[in-house]
Length: 333
Length: 257
Image (cartoon, rainbow over all chains, first blue to last red; front, side, top):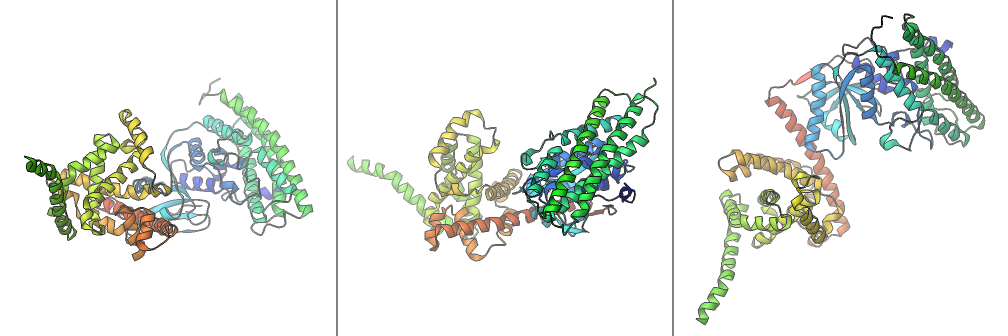
């Protein structure tokens, strides 16, 4: 896969992972690469599809409070959440402002959503004198007044890192696999999004059906394929690095290597098919997803991607079952 | 004998008349900002106000809260009372509205209502709360008022002169800020609804508008007041941080995202 060798592994279309990676760079766990974060949080293995017309909002329509905090938990952090809804009471507004400021005082940016565009971003500074936050998302770095921050959203969604905890690499992998398998098999808790979005393998089915009836929105389709294909490229890289990093010292290490490289081969087929589809529908113009030839070809590519991912997830399920039985940080055997 | 009997019969009526005249004078004085006059009004009617509230809520603590809130509302908006003669019915109306509002929301304990009041509260609310008020949930605005009055009440507890604390300057200032963004018409109607306790249909006939217009205006005003409320609370928050000597500015290095 020549294209993957040239890929910039410090950028991703999955802004949740981008923001998490950006935030943990301020902690003792700054050694995690974006590839690590994409894998350990499971974001590399996500597919969140609006079945109606492949809406552009699809990839970020998940219960963010639940997911991002679980992501942080996988990475070894305890965290705080605000998801208070409009109309806000003055008490809650104060609590949310305090949550952000306390986090910054600890030295950690706060993770939030829809700062300058509807994606995840970070608040990394406050200025009480001018009543504004310093913030950054993938579109812009700038300031936002406290008032705008509160008024211009229907939910004050903020997640902050509370504390960094010691964490076992075995546990990290087991927790990551647990999330990946749950998502792919459609068992992930979806809260208010239940029934509105198709996730995991079912996401491919929904997308194929939409292509077959020529129902995809060009803009949304291009964005979704950009996000999902990029994610799977990260998935392959994550699994490859796993296979390289774990040594052959004992049966656990050897099993992780063996199964991770098997899974990587399957996910590579997935990524290849998705990258080919991405090239047909470049973001943001989006090409012509209602063109019969293009639509049929992309349905075929999605089918190939799904079949490979089905094989990949079976391998990861085997690995998860295996990891569930292993608890020792050091093993003299 | 007969003569005396009549006089005795008439005595309560006469007393009421006398009280009414006295009230009118006190209201006039209180309107001009005379706190002593308002204290006098409170002294004269507190027990009766408590009685109304208690009759609806069947909960002495809740009734006490309602009276406290109602008196603050009454003081702040004495100016909107068109006819100073109607002070007592107006106060009663405020108490009644506040009481049903609180019962509807489950009282001061939210969902954890003390079980002794559950039966009566449910029944009361079901029987008597059928006005146009139900169409719009005014809870948010009332929360502002409750919050403002709560802090005023706490002030009152600390202060040796309860009325002085109750009427504290800050409370009035806060309310003025909240109403800040409203146009004259919006303000009149807003005040008529919230402070004179008139229903939208009553306001409509008072201002020669349709009820639909009143609803529109009220909901627009409500949005504006809500926005202002958030601004005020942010300002207060920042001010509090400054007063407690917390860090004013803290900017980390910009993240790589």
